[in-house]
Image (cartoon, rainbow, N blue to C red; front, side, top):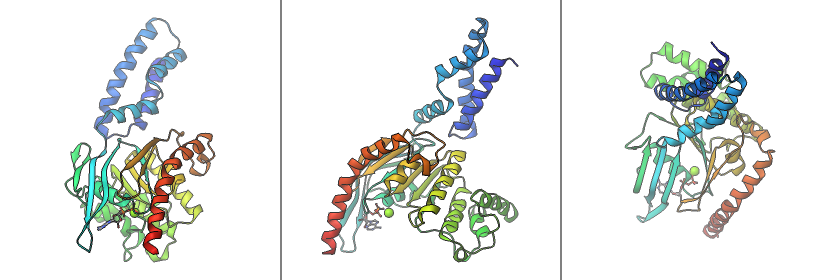
Length: 342
Ligand SMILES: Nc1ncnc2c1ncn2[C@@H]1O[C@H](COP(=O)(O)OP(=O)(O)O)[C@@H](O)[C@H]1O
Ligand SMILES: [Mg+2]
């Protein structure tokens, strides 16, 4: 193997680990990328170019593997798409209440998207629509380009309040998904054990939820969801009930787990700092009826440590920009809530 071949191989391996796709799609993309790279390399070698120059040329032409992977992801159909979605609920008084109006949102394959907005703006409703738990009143909701017709197995959901079963211990809770899919108990337990390890709960398999701290219950809930390897992960203010230290730990762990799976994430929070620290993109929703007020790209480097990324000089700039949009919506929502109380 020549030095250039080795460089190509390294490049493609790095690209492979960054691509947020399934095996088959990855193979297609890698073969295509390889063709281009080999053509270039042959030309370079024929011209007697040395190895390091060849690598510099490959990187210049294709960019960093991470950037190239992102480009591939953005060229595909979005993993999640809401087009002109309006959602009305029937109130107990029998009138219609519009929770969302004309909302457009799309999330690329492997993208981490955070949704922020004041209380009651329709964040949870948005997730309910994506998950298929609720149908839109108008507009379309698509997953991988296909209309959502019901609850999909591709979707995992983590709520603010843990959805772990109180009567099951950690092992049985985490093994629930595989058991429901028909995996036999021994194999389901092995998988569960593995995920319990990944979320740092080894040794607590036999504990029941009430015997765990809030942070540990959250870890169990994460393992219970991630064991199903959802391509789409919906999270509804999952860490808002945790103390600050535990929360930071959990956010970092989530980023680690996500970077290994490359699922597409919609993470709902009312905390702008959390949104920026975690996401590739932040979407601001207006005070109800919710619609998209602005979308911001967060180009902070990864892998990130959420407690350190806050001190990145770009962070404050991004925060300022988004807060300018969000502040007005929070004020509107706050004024309304005062009117209701008084
Ligand atoms: N099933 C429902 N029936 C009637 N109204 C609902 C229902 N679900 C949500 N709403 C209303 O829709 C609005 C948006 O709710 P939600 O999506 O939970 O907001 P958020 O998560 O942003 O706080 C709220 O005013 C809420 O009361
Ligand atoms: Mg909510």
